[in-house]
Length: 108
Image (cartoon, rainbow, N blue to C red; front, side, top):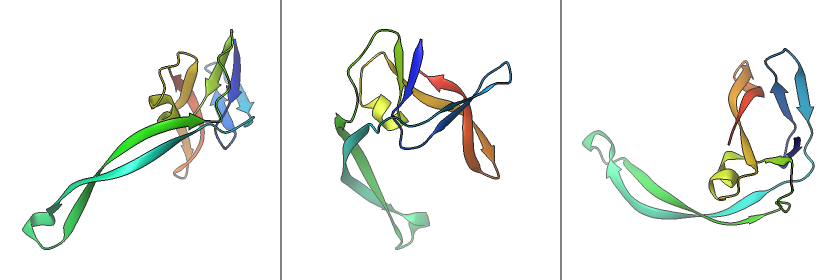
């Protein structure tokens, strides 16, 4: 299998054997989204309103066609907007001082 990264940044995969696989971005897949206001509530019965929204995902752009033996790495949002079986999103993040520096798994 081959991995292609369609996120806007390099993905570093930390393999169980200790290897670090650097996957540079080869394109960017994005999904249109539209926020819809669905109400609000008062915080602790105060006059401070907490607005609630629902996000509707739309068309995906920048995603290559499905190919045999290739997994495409995309953001979780792109993955959730598609029913394609060849999409993966980074999971089990590794952080350094709170900043994500890689992952140890992918969501399928």
